[in-house]
Image 1 (cartoon, helix red, strand yellow):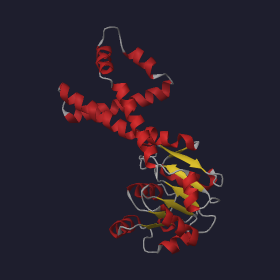
Image 2 (cartoon, rainbow, N blue to C red; image 1 turned 90 degrees about the vertical axis):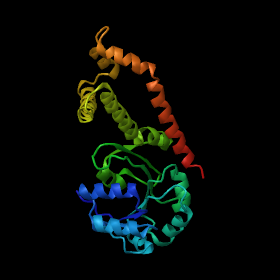
Image 3 (cartoon, rainbow, N blue to C red; image 1 turned 135 degrees about the vertical axis):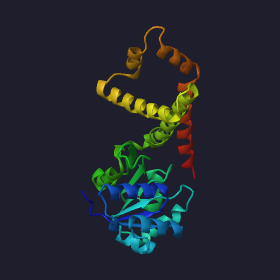
Image 4 (spheres, one colour; image 1 turned 180 degrees about the vertical axis):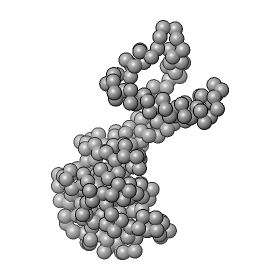
Length: 269
């Protein structure tokens, strides 16, 4: 189902492109409803040629026409200047959807208006798959109805108390990184043990997919399935012993904490 909103993206980087691509592909937004401005002219040409979105109009005209303004810039970019442009040209009812890491709704209100609907979104990186949660926090003037249809165009949505957003970023949104790294390491282990890489890769992917389905279908805790899979003195428990000795769990947990810490640092301006 298509939304009838005009959506303007300030910034046309990789994450903005992923959102645009998924929304158009999923037919929740038409290309002619999307405009993009960016300081990189080559980037604008690419987005226009690839997706058919409007990249020719001025920032002023795009803001004036927008029902929703997606702020897709870096935390260190000049948000003060962007806020001034929004105040000057955008309608008071136009909602701000920010995907800027680390910048709170309170800070965004300081830039874009204290009484403007502001939606802080930490988009998932699995936009093309339909999987993955985007973390979303709303200010007092925003509602789920304003953004649900747009956000569901590029994955699933988890509305959160803003106090959890930085944690969600380092754990949930960065989560595919940990999975990719694990799968790569698991496939390498198969090669190290003597399997051809193509076979090791296929087995790793199949086991990851099957393990997730098993957890969902049975409702069992991973420890319960581990107990079922490992006979006394057997192959599996010997492998787990070595994995336990490698500090694997603590290393993964430290990685998440480091990612959360970095997210918090990005918001310190």
